[in-house]
Amino acid sequence: MPLHFAPLRLPLRRRLQTAAVLQWVCSFLALGQLCAVLFALALRGPLWLPALLYGLWLLADRDTPRRGGRRSAWVRGWPLWTYFRDYFPISLVRTTELDPRRNYIFGFHPHGVLAAGAFANFCTEATGFGVLFPGLRPHLLTLPCWFRLPLFRDYMMSGGLVSSEKSSLEYLLSREGGGQVAVIALGGPPESLDAHPGALTLQLLGRKGFVRIALEHGASLVPVFSFGENELFRQIPNPPGSGLRRFQLRLQRILGVAIPLFHARGVFQYNFGLLPFRRPIHTVVGSPLVLPRTPNPSPQTVERWHGLYLERLVALFEEHKLGYGVPPERHLTFV
Image 1: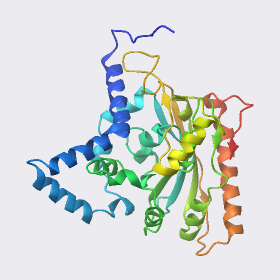
Image 2: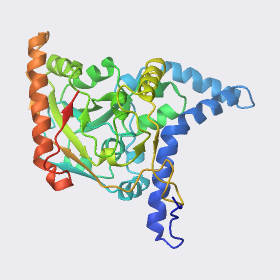
Image 3: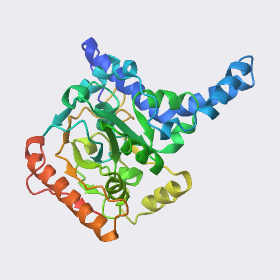
Image 4: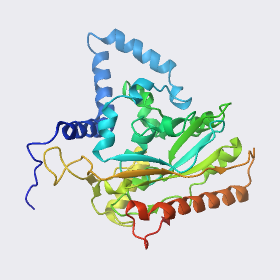
């Protein structure tokens, strides 16, 4: 197939959009590792004293990712994120108002390859979360391993990212006065391995811990479906049971992270690269499922509310799918 190059003459805003997405992809694929290398080099060079002092501060600050993080309104409001939003573009859709006196778990579906919709909507103000949901404070939960990387951890927390450990979720939901939103890609890293264009398979049947924690704290569950999330990248075919999928799952057990072998387009050509395709993402926030505070929920209680959550998620998807290009014969599949 001949290479399809980008036109030489493009509006400046298009180039800025591409640059914004390029820095985002590089941030999540390489910036953490680069920060760790620079920190190690600083310890061995003339900057050893500032690096040592920062290392001591890291030790004292180690619990912050599990205690609500350290967000920055300035970072969340960078103009950079509006270019990131407009590249796809990404929109956040509210279906109902949410009471800021309550705490919430937003179940984000599907995970996608890099969860671009989750980042744009809940780690920046580019899509207007603060305007749509006044009084609410979103926190996107991600793998704890990222918060062990010096400097990078602080950059992540500035956008509202926090650790996905159980204690982190419990801390958010136990805040008096409400207004806390814990955003969780409930399918987890394994679901990213199924993030092929057109895929509607969600790994949810065995994931019930979030329901138990919500019951224990009396938090509300809100289904969120991000239409277009799986359309951003292609993956090397890895059907369940294939040698590649078995290798990916084995690697995930060792490293703690899933490694989808994805590709899309490049910076100057459209045939191959690690930049996502320009595909619209519409993230629809459903109505809350209000759970009663239940200190020690029984397995039957957890099962019942888990089933109700799945019903709400299906109803949200079915109500909006035609408006966002999903054929009427397509439905969600839970595994």
